[in-house]
Image (cartoon, rainbow, N blue to C red; front, side, top):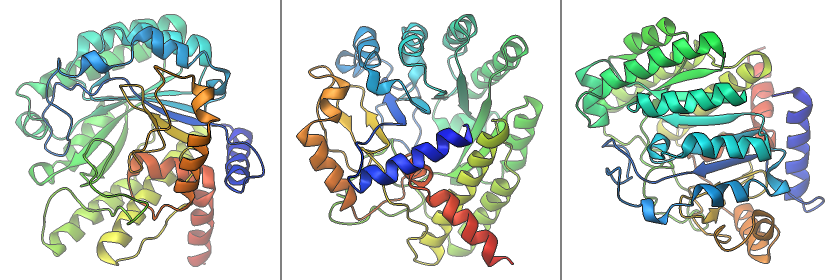
Length: 375
């Protein structure tokens, strides 16, 4: 991310929250499907590649959304699911989005078990010179990874995907990384997963499986009560503290998948998230806590077309099958949701917190305060 774009995004978001300028999205999370071929224990998506597809936005509907000029200055478009590569039309969809909206970066997360579909996507990416970042889930090696993901043979398919990424990056370089989700089954596999990341020249990120995340059913209303952070599993406090020593060490030694300023923001964001989790678990402190910028700088499009502020405030501003992106964004309903965001009690859901940390400026403030405290 260029410093000018980041600074402009921060000031625009802060001014829009104060009502002095109109808000404009900088980041969109696009859920292209809720179907998945894995059975991860920390995820609430249906473990079926078929169920739910009839409600998904069609490729033409998605391309129409991104024809809207409101989407044409995005810093980031997140493609998520479910498992995005279950969409057979994903390569053409991403090509169409990129042709119209030209986001500065498309960020796609995948469980890596569909190497043939990945190959089709990367062919289109290379042909159209699409700016993309791929995040692949690796939670151990062999049977351990398969057990965490609930799919026999999953790790073998992941390795095929990693080999494919390595080959394609020789022709068309693009950033890519490994996401290592910690569960009781794979707590001792950090070093091996890091070595896999180094072998394939990938970024590395370690996260603790969380009770509340974008892929779980959230049974709390953040307008009434803060959505807390808690691991998705139980461990004695001493053992959990040891886990977080490893997570903190991984954050300090993070292998960034991005160059230059983007790498520094990425690395700082990892440390920010880790600090927030530790403060909540071990000190009972909701700190750091950025001013939420959902529906000011970022929002989420669900697979069925509902446009919502974030994972925690799952209230629809409207359906994109029935109204345009600009129409919903500028509606009275959207203004009501922005007021709800301002009054929100808060959460610590990683994929929603990090955009708010960036565009509120809290990430930079937190970094400066931390540097001063060490003097």
